[in-house]
Image (cartoon, rainbow, N blue to C red; front, top):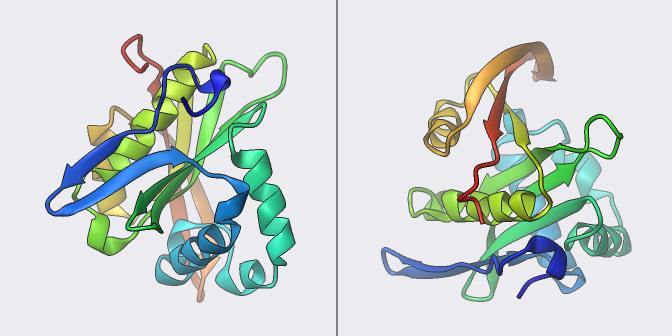
Amino acid sequence: MCSARCGPCVAYERRAMTTPYTIRLVNEDDAAAFRELRLEALRTAPTAFGADAESAAQIPLESWRQRMREQSGGEYEATFVAESGGALVGMSRFFQETGAKERHQAHIYSVYVQPVFRGQGVLAALFRAGFAWAHGRGLRMLKLGVTATNAPAIRAYTKLGFSVYGVDPELLCYQGTYYDELLMYRRVMPDDQ
């Protein structure tokens, strides 16, 4: 069991192709590996994230440890990681709104799966863990943003039940090019446990 707040255990194991992986909550011992995965994500997909690799690389390791403590199934957030062969290969962060009128929803951030693990069900498994977390908290709605030019991610999110509800125009500017962000939502379903 990952955490009493997660509801049923969300540590999925799956054998995809020949590469096994496990989905679990991040923990503070993951700080260095998570930092490296996050920096890889920011470097290889700079238009997919609002943060930049240069700034993130300046954050001290102790700050990453603190983040991992907060994101390991804290009161309002949970970060799930995919682990294979002792290495972190994917991540997704779920953050519940805290305002009295918005507590029924959570936002999904920091989604990344290493290219070699894409198409093997890792993203779906990360999201199923988050769906179970949301269901266990009694949430009704999940929302995320995705760069409008990221067709593979849009397809993947659509397959997971997300629909577009709006556009945030020119949200990101990278190397002089502006990128719109599609806003997507999905209701938390009774079978998301």
